[in-house]
Length: 182
Image (cartoon, rainbow, N blue to C red):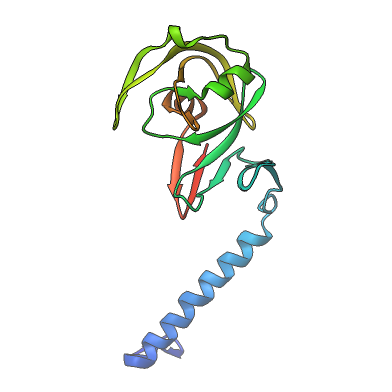
């Protein structure tokens, strides 16, 4: 087959020429994308807990995404400000509210006593005892959540960041051992 003055290869030779043309177009597109103004990778700031150097959050300047790395135990952790104080959270997409340990609740400034505890939920091990609280503000990098309910859990080992915060700060995506808060 001929086209104007050029002969178009057919059969295996045509496939090879077509594949080369496709790779050439993809390569050219990649180079144009990299050279396009404003397409450079945004610088990042790393936030980490001094007690746990493996846990980190990174907020990019462009999208203000917070990227959390999956830890060896399979969970995602983040340091957040609760009413202005740092709290180390396990991000729990299955929890409906923020749940603070007694230690974290005390550090944040909540007053409570054991005789105020009541059933606040049900877990795999049965009833959960705690105290209902109102949390004014939670901040994760540039993301903020305001005026939400939470609980102080009796005998909890880690504070949980639940859906009432995640829903206010945007979307949550999990892929390739990363959780992205947008």
